Amino acid sequence: MNKSIIVNLEKQTLDLYESDNKLLKSYAVNTAKNGPGELFGSECTPRGQHIIRAKIGKDQAINTVFVGRRPTGEIYEPELAKQQLSRDWILTRILWLSGTQPGFNRLGNVDSMRRFIYIHGSPDEIPFESPSSHGCINMHNADLMELFDLVPVYTSVFITED
Image (tube, rainbow, N blue to C red):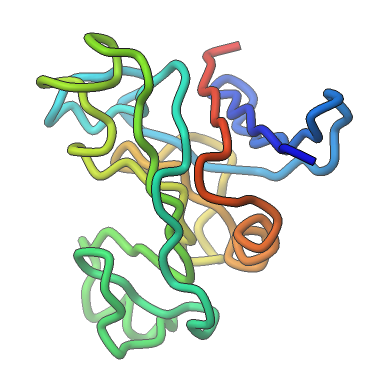
């Protein structure tokens, strides 16, 4: 069966549905500190209809560190974070999003894929009570590993404010 994802920016949730609109699982997420928005360089989470264009990190260890969508050979731990306080941690797996709405979240200066908008793992000790990402949708690593295995490439992802 086909699956779909709805990310709710207000509630900070990611809901996974079966094609019959049956809710399979709900996850806590962390989205952009700068709120919703589509412009390149805004560090906002883009809204609207997207698809998972690529799945990256299959078979990597939990807490694998990625830079430029490649594993660095590092495994995240709090001690590593203390050495690099300003680093934007992309961990465990990456679901790379591509907008499907030309002029809104696809092409030009609003292209989600060219903005490198992902659903990705983040340090588990980061609280998810309020948005704090640089535009991506951050998940707890174990949750992301589960989601990664449940969804294929081209899964629909709708990002909404309510």
